[in-house]
Amino acid sequence: MATSPPYPTPPGAPVDFRPRHAHWWQKRWVRYGALITLLTLSGLVILALVRRQTGTEGFLVGLGLAVLPVPLLIAAFRWLDRVEPGPWRNTVFAFAWGACAAALIAIVANSFATKWIATSTADPSSADTLGATVIAPFVEECAKAAAVLLIFLFRRRDFTGIVDGVVIAGVTATGFAFTENILYLGTAFGTDQMTGDRGIASVTAATFFVRVVMSPFAHPLFTVFTGIGFGIAALSGDGQRFRRVAVPLTGLLLAMGMHALWNGSSTFGDYGFFAVYGAFMLPAFGLLTWLVIWTRQRELRTVREELPAYAATGWLTPAEPYALGSMRARRLARDYAGRHLGKQAARTVAQYEAYATSLAFLRHRARRGRAGADFAPREWELLHELWRRREVAQPALDHAAMTTAPPVRVAAPPWPVYGVYGQPQGHGSYGAYGPAAPYPEYNPYQS
Image (cartoon, rainbow, N blue to C red; front, top):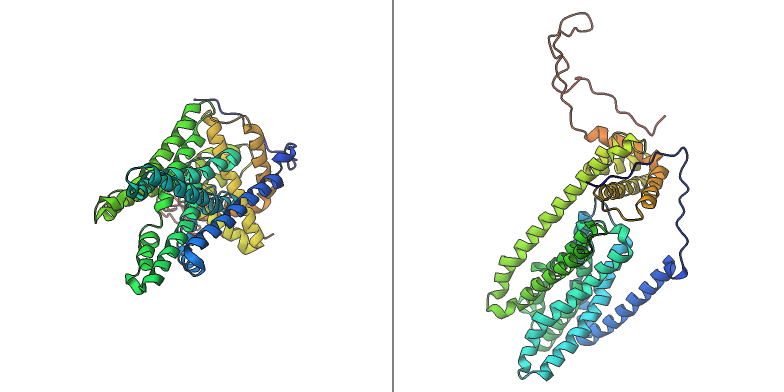
């Protein structure tokens, strides 16, 4: 077991933390500007390509139908990320990359590969099958994995474990599926316009049922394997270079395999789609859901185990580790601060909870010998952010801990207990859980 770094003592005044000087190409506005330009150009090109293939009316119909599952999927992934919520800019980037850059790469590469197969093989009719089962899974999963890789490399502080990998991968794939659904639904609507089909028997209705109702989680499920691989790599030490490379590649290969199986289900006969859906997709979805929820509970346990040492050195109050390790107590703390001091106080408490969770994970990695060279400045940065918000957050968390703490069993004394007027009341007049009269509620926000 590696030796844990010493715990710093709290200062008498707030720490003056200033980031190091950065070169011009490392400045935030330069990176954000380049990224926004790239994604904007990709979005304009993909918009033109999809609209040319579906027509304006088909594009609008496809857009209206494809957007329906997006809020539900984004909300589900953000819910999974509640223990240590990543910044919204990462979520926006992941969705935009999937919907614009990854979709553009997939459309161009898949079209080129399918045409090349059709012209270079003796059986041109097999081009679509090979493109769907071999080319598309490889190209699309690599394009989506690029977003996970970029955040893993350049936003490393926000990428600390499996849940972060799952969330980033899932949101990226949600954006990709959104654009792909526009294309498929818009094309189906155009087919119905030419054939005159309407209602539930139309191609549009069938496409909507398969892609939006039955399998809105298909693309996120594939790419989540890649996210899990990067999440395991994030938990690995700097010396485990082989693991940091091999595990993400393994996750990517699993994503490609599951994607190929799904795309090839239509070639397995009339009921091939339903067989793959019931035998592989649903079990894999249930297993991954259980894994992510179990991992989230493990993260809460890490918070409860790592933060008491900071309470012992004076950075936190004794009740905070318990409150920060309970999602219910966290919510009560935000509500309590918002009710007494307003919405800004609730946001301050939420920020305090996020920084404290990051601090617990950082210390956990250090205790296991997996801390990087920037451990000390990162720890001081997180402590500084906590110190700035402590006057608002600590009373709210103390109240939440007092409200949600389980009752403590009090042993009955072995001697007789007498009442106010000297009347004996027998043994254990305090009852099984302490005094019968409750303590009055303490409001730390009132003098």
